[in-house]
Image (cartoon, rainbow, N blue to C red; front, side, top):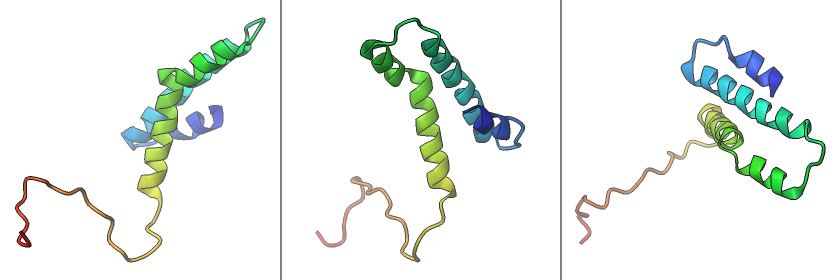
Length: 89
């Protein structure tokens, strides 16, 4: 996470800087866990549930999806607006 954070922190894109900040927070939580004398399943579960780690994972998923080129020429599906009246009705 350190390398990812370092590579994104000075970028001009605000979302990339946000990912870098979230990586630093998650890294701090992981480092705290690793300094513990005993690491049981409960503390690992709590780290897994932590907002910092979840934020990094969600940000990276979003970032990857946004940058991933479409694999075909099929338009991406869009959300259906239930308020629109269908002409088929």
